[in-house]
Length: 269
Image 1 (cartoon, helix red, strand yellow):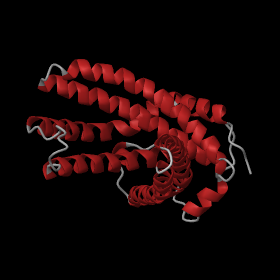
Image 2 (cartoon, one colour):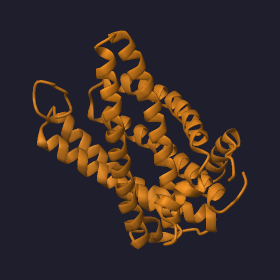
Image 3 (cartoon, one colour):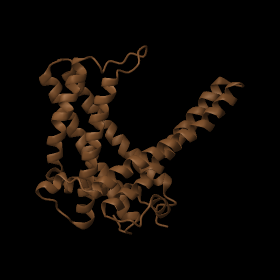
Image 4 (cartoon, helix red, strand yellow):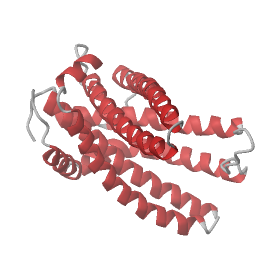
C-alpha cells in the first residue's frame, strides 16, 4: 500500500498544469470554440425570457431545464474528449493534431458513459448515507434540537467529504478508460487506492480552497458586468466564466491523471 503525499501531489498537479498549458490550449481550443456560441446563445435565451429567475412558488419552466440540460451535455461531451486527449498526452506523450482534437471515438464514448455511471453511483451512495443521518437527527431532536443540529451538521460534513473521496477513487477508472484499458474496473481503482481515502479528501479540500479564491475573484467581475445588463456584457461574462472553468477543468484532469500515475502505474511525483 502506497501512501499519497498530499502536498507533493498538489504541487505536482499545479506544476504539470502550467508546464503543459500550451498543449492544453492546443488540445482544447477547438472545443472551446464549439462551446462558446452554445453557452452564449443559451444564456441569452434564458435571460431574455426571464427563465433563470428563481421563484420557489412556481415549478421550474421546462424550457429552462431543457436548455440547461443541453448546455450541460455539450460541456460533458467536450470534457470527455479533452480529458481523453489530456490523459493520453501526459501518460503516453500522444499529441493530437487537426480533427483529433475534436475526437468523438469509442474511448470518448466510454469515458462519457463511465462518467455518468460513476456520477449515478456516487449519487445513490450519497442518498443512502443521508437516510441514517436523517434518522439520527430525528432521534436526537426529540431530546435536544441543539444537539441534533450539531451532530447532524458534523455527520453531514463528514459524510459529504467521504463521498468526495469515494468519487475520486472510483474516477481513477476513467483514466484507465482513456488509456484503452479494459482490465481496470471501479473495484480495481478502489482497491489500488486503499488506505488513502482521507489523504485524497485532504488533497481535494486544498484544491477546493484554491478554486474558492478563483471563484471569489470571478464573482466580483460577474457582479460588475452583470449590472450592465447588456448583450456585450453578458457575452463577456460568459467568455470569462468559460476561461475560468477551462483552467479549473484542466487542473482537475491533471490531478486525476497524477493520482492514476501514482496509484495504478506506481509512478512518483
